[in-house]
Image (tube, rainbow, N blue to C red; front, side):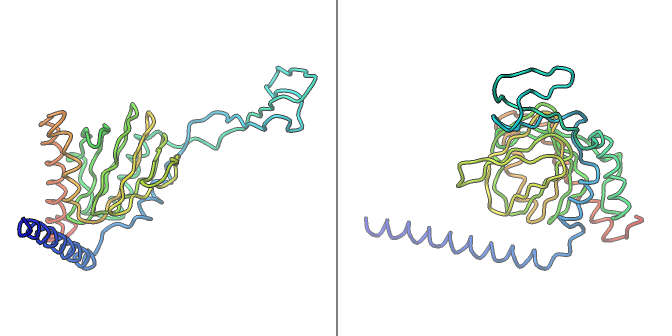
Length: 267
């Protein structure tokens, strides 16, 4: 009995040692990579086109804020005492429609990084089912250590973020992004123009409102993210056509990077 227990502990120690060595190898490998894109570069480009719907925001001044009527244009309400005061404040100018914003972003990325963004004929919106949520993505660039894609949902969705050997940042073009970080009891809300960063090894709960669209950049061991990204497709929805579309998009990205590496940007 003692021998069996000792053997289990030996295997556990061996697995931990292998994991530690593998993690160090990955870290050293990433340190040797020259990256095409930068997190802040993608975020700044996305912010140029981010915006919120035109309209008016209602500001709540609270009860007893020194006002005695509701500030609704053309409809004053006399009051004998302090009441809730509301003020209509114009919102900032609206951003571009998300599809137009994406089109302009793609053009700019191709200008800045020729040979590293997939051509129009290889761009495809593909459903993604992972962690209980459902969205859609359009892959723009992919390699073993980086990817850039457009992501979002027309209906809204929520679930588990996944835990990766990669750092992922999302800059919101439209809609809302709710994030509940592991180990906390409160969530955060992010709006158009803001960037949400998901660090290596982190896990969060995520929720996107309807018509939420964003630009995502990932850096790390990109093949390791495919397990989470494809698990629900394989074991839940069993939508093998979507599985094929996803793997084909990644293969096209790898092919483009290999072609550019071997033959240059004009290949």
